[in-house]
Length: 169
Image 1 (cartoon, rainbow, N blue to C red):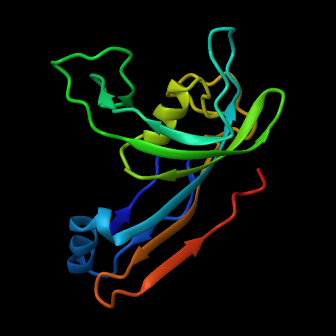
Image 2: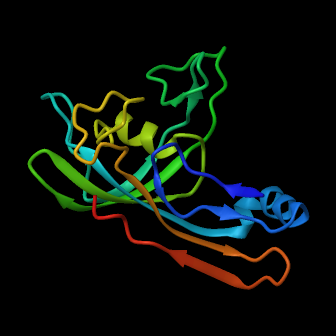
């Protein structure tokens, strides 16, 4: 039974439960059960003079809303008709290059397309991201990887940690 899924073309760790009961326990208590979710992303550097570079480390705290196609994004202005969902992403830039930056991201909240929406909003579209109109596609897929998932087992309470390095290409 699926517990933790990834966006299409995202590589990395998935979580399945062996029984429907365990799936329900995990999903009903997800925010308390999960200790850490860490992702790696290769993002395009901002283009244009009016977009400031992000600090080496920081937090993006920007609520998400959905468009008519149910895709999440950060609204540029508040619209009282659209529901905004709190979303918080902590980031660290591991390496900056001329055209791309390599990010490590940790989710405080886990909303649909949160990382993609937050980085795009900050001017750093994830390479290969057709949804947010990336200009580059170096690996012919979305350059986002679910690296680490740590959670408390819903039956034993044991802290479980799983980690997988990103694929070479």
